[in-house]
Image 1 (cartoon, rainbow, N blue to C red):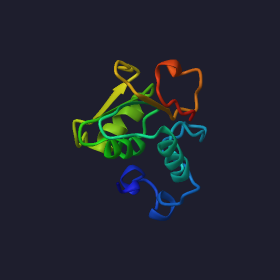
Image 2 (image 1 turned 180 degrees about the vertical axis):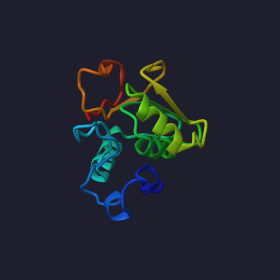
Image 3 (image 1 turned 120 degrees about the vertical axis):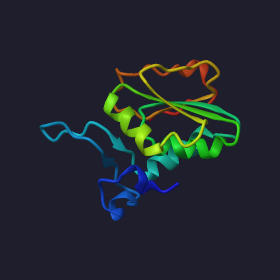
Length: 142
């Protein structure tokens, strides 16, 4: 999955730098509001959650790239449900993923947790999302 598709506002060298999180929007004061996590962190989360084909995965804190990576692993029958509290992030994720396949559901603050086998929490706002850890086979802190 080409990472630069999810960071179109940055140079390729930044998009593919393993150590950098790529900030997507900032507020008027310059504070980062969302980002595509550093590649090493995404790889670490995906490795720890031990995804398998056919799984259903819930991701809180969407950016698109991580959801696409997960969708590729759980193919051909699994499903990724990715949500975010910010309408801008959801719109951006839908635009950048192009909703290319039925394995990926992008939604605004409505986690459909029935049947979820793994949760990846990628939001930095711990008060914004409550992760149902006791229901998950492989919870991963984010």
